[in-house]
Amino acid sequence: TDIVHRLKSAISEETLEVWYQPIVHVKSGRFTSAEALVRLPDGKGGFFPAGQVIAFAERGGLVEALGDYVLGHACRFMSLYAHQLELEHMGINISVQQLLVENSADHLLEVIRASGVPADRITLEITESVLIQSIEHASSSLDQLRKSGIRIALDDFGVGYSSLNYLSNLPVDVIKIDRSLTRQIYINPKQRALLHSIVEMAKINSLTVVSEGVETKEDQQLISASGVQYIQGFYYARPMPQEKAIRFLAEQN
Ligand code: G
Ligand code: G
Ligand code: MN
Ligand code: NA
Image (cartoon, rainbow, N blue to C red; front, side):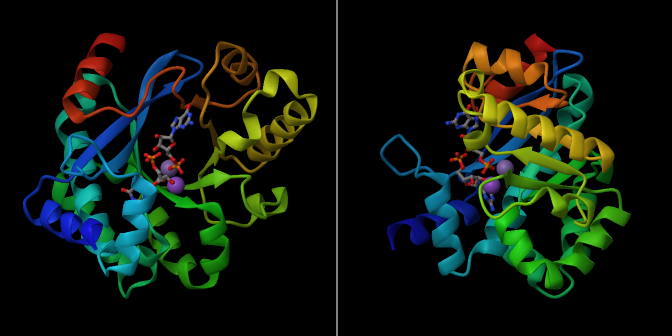
């Protein structure tokens, strides 16, 4: 297909873009974290939806090539700019397929080491539902990554069959609460109660909590007071190209 073809060329020609969305640390009000997000140019001045790009990469056998590309670029970005921009962590999405290949942890660690970034600056984000389905096969790689200092985030938490029970058993360090759980939280007391329970459960399990998809002042105020440590969302900053992210972080931090 067009997307697979374009993706393949964009990887080999290095025209595939990695954008960054700044994430605010609630206590300090500074943008000490960010998430890397892939952007494939559509040839018409725009970009294909990233979800679609990932789906085609999975079908077209390009998951590892795409994954290595994004991981390598995001780690080099950290290696070059983290100090100057006062960035402490970078989150990078990985597909579960990247974890299920042989020696996956060795390979991911090698890409990270080659960039020169310390492992404890990197958080690998894995979609909750996908991780739960593959946990038996993925857990030894996750253990190895965590022993090397990499943090693991449970992405899109609350979308699937999540249970607060999981939080004490999964090999993860961070949970990213999906937007569907907190959207318009200021008008929905049930959502506030749920967020409260997640924060409490995370605290007991020593997990860091990021609230995703915060778009409005009302939601931002309630969520800031809820005990989550980080907030990500259009309210603060949208995903932006590397050069713009550098300017944004230099101005804000
Ligand atoms: O950035 P955007 O909203 O378009 O992302 C859509 C989806 O694609 C999200 O679920 C996001 O996690 C995923 N995604 C974005 N970039 C990457 C990437 O580099 N690798 C993987 N595996 N998923 C990504
Ligand atoms: O699945 P994941 O959490 O990795 O998805 C990240 C995607 O969520 C990014 O591509 C980004 O474009 C999108 N996103 C980030 N903040 C917001 C927000 O405040 N509102 C909405 N609708 N999407 C957001
Ligand atoms: Mn993510
Ligand atoms: Na995701």
